[in-house]
Length: 88
Ligand SMILES: [Zn+2]
Image (cartoon, rainbow, N blue to C red; front, side):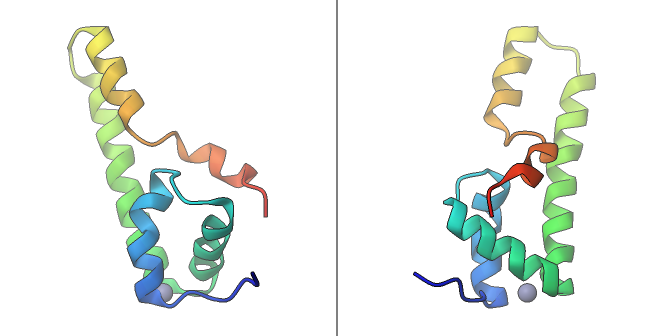
């Protein structure tokens, strides 16, 4: 399998899974490559990533039983900092 470039449509179709860390390493690389060269998709990616971040921060501030909070937080994708370590 060689690494080709994804089209915008293919990238956007994978964005949710990318944010959820559910793509294979190979597909993750393909999305990352596309995001590096495509401003349009980067904007969509940022928007979705921000939205997730926002939800996470909101949850931190809401008063609720901590076990419930933990359950919701663990259902969200992991923090973005871990992305950089993906093997390329
Ligand atoms: Zn694109």
